[in-house]
Amino acid sequence: MRKPFKFKQFTIYQDRCAMKIGTDGVLLGAWTNISNSPESVLDIGAGTGIIGLMLAQRCYANTIDAIEIDEEAFEQCVENFEASPWSDRLFCYHASLDEFLDEIDDKYDLIISNPPFYSEQVTSGNIARDQARQNSSLPFNLLLKGVSELLSKNGSFAIVVPFKEEKSLLQQALKFELYPVRLLRVKGHPDSEVKRSLIEFHFKKTEVLTNELIIEKSRHEFTEDYINLTKDFYLKM
Picture 1 (cartoon, helix red, strand yellow):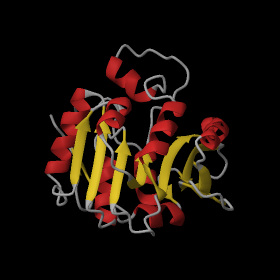
Picture 2 (tube, helix red, strand yellow):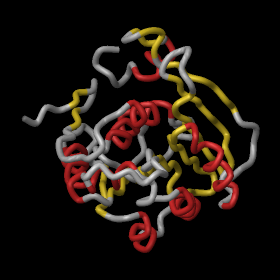
Picture 3 (cartoon, one colour):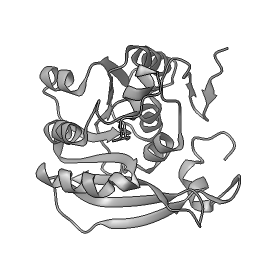
Picture 4 (tube, one colour):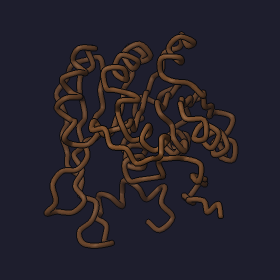
């Protein structure tokens, strides 16, 4: 049974993707700054295509490209893109970041990524799922190198990572002259530890605007901040 995930303006099929739709991708798609009206967007590691679709809904970029290494996920991303109202602006490449860098000379105004995030080697028995979850398939240094080559001079790069990886990512980004400008730390509920970090980078050094987001006040009762961030997308918000 192919039960899709329905959003307000588009639908996602995810039965062929190792990593299903989760809070991380939706948060990143909603939080990413588009105030500079990007003309071109790139999503590195597209999965279902959720973030590209959210950006297509939010901004008028003529070009929204995505790259996905897993064949099943790539085919599903293409299917989701083509079924959306913005199919003329969305395109997915079946490639690794290395292969993409070899082929593309373009620069992007906005790059986004919800990358594989487990630095530990954990084997589930599902190769595609392991590849989608473990950063050995896309380590931070390779991702940051690619971003530094593909990002336009005044462009921005937005990423979501586990909080425990935040410090390492920020240190590695400096090597590529990528500097944090916005930082959002995410908690599941008021008493829980910080779980995720969303970070926006520029090539230009500036003061970092840091905020915290709590998702739930209590079980199944969302905070106003979370509702305001995601209400344009989730059907029940």
